[in-house]
Amino acid sequence: MKDELIGFETAKLAKEKGFKEFCSNGFDDRLEGIEPFGIGNGEISSTHSIDYFDNKGDNHLYARPTQSLLQRWLREVHEIDIEIELTDNSRHSYYESSIKKQDIRDYNDEDCFDQVRQVHIKGKFKTYEQALEKGLQEALKLIIKK
Image (cartoon, rainbow, N blue to C red; front, side):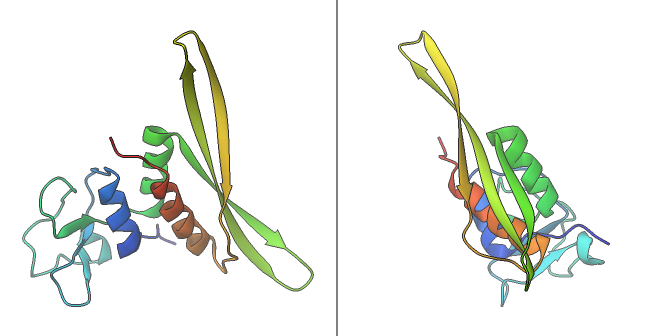
């Protein structure tokens, strides 16, 4: 059993939204087929001399964290929680994702209230990890970068 790494599209979104945590895996969009590299897949790629990198520098490199690290970053930094639910019906079992975002809004600098937005992700996924990947992508889209 191992932690699932995010895909390239999710890595691009994470970088756009400010994810800057160090990771031991990544993508380089200059490589043919946007091949992942890093020590997490068993060996360091010979085309890269770095073991760890983040999203601060090179525009061609994208950090590739585990799904759980990105999920934790969304929860702790942006107060976005992703929930995955197993749904059973008489014919099939599948996973669905939903996102909860805690919003705090100020009115007249006196009154403040918390509002929870919940977004259900359309789609039925065969695995927990597929549902989580889609949830991560949709959660990242909720972030408004300042």
